[in-house]
Amino acid sequence: MTAQGFLLLLELVGVFAFALDGALVAMRSTHLDLFGVVALGIVTAVGGGILRDVLLGELPPATFRTWYYLATATGGALVAFWGHRLLARMARPIVVFDTIGLSLFAVTGAQLAVDAGIDPGQAILLGGLTGVGGGTMRDVLVRKVPSILTGGLYAVPALLGAVVAVVGPLLGISAGVAAFAGGVVCAGLRTGGLLRGWRAPRATLQSPEELD
Image (cartoon, rainbow, N blue to C red; front, side, top):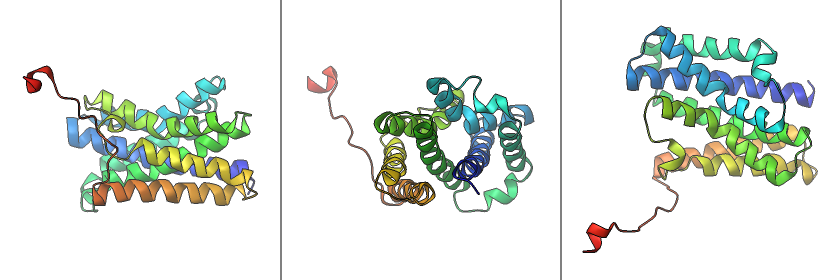
């Protein structure tokens, strides 16, 4: 398998995982019907990739140039809709699928940006955006404060995973190994933050009422 094919495979796995995540959030938070569940699953799955492609000037975005992105996202959302009772028995399924999607999208987004000729720094930012973009759109649509703004480790793991994915090949490491390592770093930090309560620093500025 070529490096490009490997990245495509990883991205499709991320699409499926994020579609499951978005659909489960739709059912748990807002009790949407089948159409709403599938729509939110698709937005969660492909939103970050669309943002990345638009910023890279890859128009129309890959989601609309091929059939398999939307098909994979729709499949993931339908699996969540029809199999939610089984998925509910799993340990924290939404967090699991969100972590998988975040990790895969961060590393593939960064490496695809590098392949498009983007400098490493900007490629890392695009990797992070690819990872958190769909989840942010999901949270806005269900009227939640986006995860990247609530202090939990969400954007930071995505950015660090993208750093590993981009810097690895510059140090002579193969793109596949760097992508795997970046995914492990992202998933590890995200999981550690959830299990151990790691958080980004919070602002401590008091309101005028509290100062009186």
